[in-house]
Image (cartoon, rainbow, N blue to C red):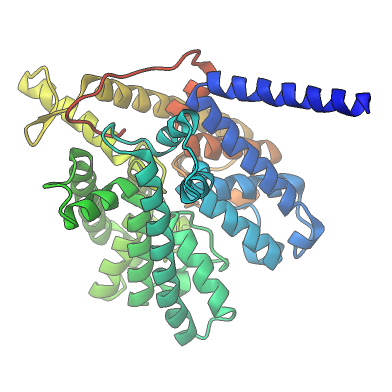
Length: 453
């Protein structure tokens, strides 16, 4: 009896120590450990015999689990050929968790049961979502979950009818899988050629694009728009305004450039050429990673444009990756201020807080550092053309999933490098750096105008 009590006391002391350690830990470290734990769990589940349709290497299972949690979509093996329905289901769950943040489900359960929302959970959730300071995290999480499942359900319904009209097998599962994959900007497909077979299907292109943009522009925008619609606020936040303008202009410019310059689509009719140009731009800027034309066949000029769009990426608090549209806009704002001889960065008369500009600069520096390091290491281990290596690294770090066809041919060491890059891309290079090196919490003073970076 005494031995049992002693074991219980030791266990309670252990749990108290863990809770104390978590409270003292910076949110970035908790985010790091959280995503890492989900990757390990997914890796174990995908390695189970009944999760596989045929024998798959342990390293490939790790690669797939990381790609799913990071919502990247790069794969070394075929999702449909190598994994059973159970394996595909596990991949879909990992995509969903990675898409809206690993803290969201647990936080939503806590909020739904009217239990107390701890300060530690609030800090980690704010780190995951990168919110402006005037957003309440508890209400924001409720809105995120409601919005996510509503959009994914609507998307699945539309895709069901599109796939059924095209005589696609397993229509119901295909509709659900691709709706979640599109909204979470994961780019995973149970078709080995992505959506190349649907390159001229207007409705498929439209629905996938809408789902991808809904996920990529971020939950901040939709919460803002909903609050404005209900009359709770007079105007959307500065963050939302910057996100919408940047996404619109990048999509427009990218579409026009590819439409005018890419040789592989010049034989298409004007409307198909426009649709194809738009889809490749959309898939890059939202980091969803689907494609309707063979990416390996595009020119180096188009490859450069897509690479730039992948690096810029989606928006904060969304499901996409990349440097983020707000960070890109902040850098443009800094350049404009320098040219005008101004000491402050402003958008539409609103001054951007200095600490946010500082964070944007740090994000850019971290991103470029990891991008260059990834290119260097992958070029050492692989024998592919340099531009293909650059494209692969940009796609992995931006959690995009587009590839020039080299992913399945990577060496074991190359797969490990890309796996690490996808993990860093999901966390965000600056969060990854903070998780490894920061020693104490960083506090910012509140500002009337704020921008999520």
